Length: 331
Image 1 (tube, helix red, strand yellow):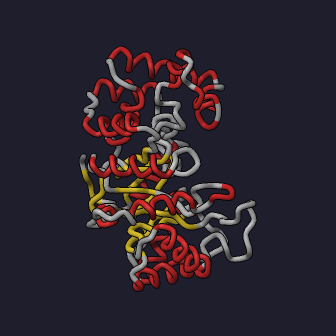
Image 2 (cartoon, rainbow, N blue to C red):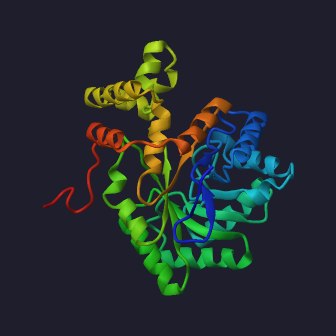
C-alpha cells in the first residue's frame, strides 16, 4: 500500500479509503469484520463511514459494526484513521425532532457523542460535515468543532459535498478564529463525472484540503458495466447512477469506447478507473466499498497500476473534463 499526507496535515493515510456504506444493509456483521481485517492486512488504514449509514430504521448500524470490530482489540482502533460524518436526519421514518439534524452546535454535540458510543471509541480522527447547512453560520459550527477538539473527541474536520465557495467560506471563517479549519473534502469524482475539477478541487488545493473521491466507479458504470450486462452479470448496473447513465445513448457510447480501449490493453476497467483517480492532482484517494475479498484485492491492485501517458490521453479523449473555471464557461 502507498500512503500520502491528508491535505496540509501531518496525518498519513492510505491511497485507498475503505468505504463502509454497505456494512449492515448489504454485508453482514461477520463478513464486514472479515473485510476490515483483510483491508488492514493490505495496509489500508483510512476507514470512512457516516452516522446515517445503515439507512431507514437501521441508521447508525454501520457505525455499530465498526464498533464491535474495534472492540475485538488487536490494535485495530490504533491502526485505523477513522472518519465519520454528521448532518443527516437520524429519524427512522425520515423525520427528526427539532435540532436532531444539520450542523447546529447542539446537534453536533449530540451527534458526536452518539457516534462515539456506536463506534466504541473515545475519539474520531476526521469528523466530516456530510452536507452544507445553509441555516447555520460557520462561526457557530467552528465554535462547536473547536470545543470537540479541545475535549479530545475529534482531531480534524472535513467536508463532504461542498461547493468551492463553501470551502472558501468555511476556511476563511476558521482562519479568523485561529482554527485549523477543513483538512479534507469528500466529493463525487470519477472519469465519467469530472465537474469537481472546475472549482471544488481547485478550492481544495488552494486551502490545503485533501480530496477524497466517492463513487469512483460511478455506481459500477466504470467497472465493466456493458460487458457485465452482456454476460448477464450486470444486475447492479440496471438501476441507480450507473443505470441512469447507460440509458443515455451518448454516455453508453463513451462507456463502450472505454471498455473497448481497455480490452485492447488487457486491463480491467474498474482498476483503471481507480488508477486514473490516483494520478489526479490533489487527490488523497478514492473510497472503495468492496463486498467481497476479490473486489478488495482488485482495488489494491489498482494502487500499483501505472497508466502510460498514451492511455491517459485516450481516457481524456473519451471522458473529457470540463476544464478549470472560469475558462470552462468563459473566455
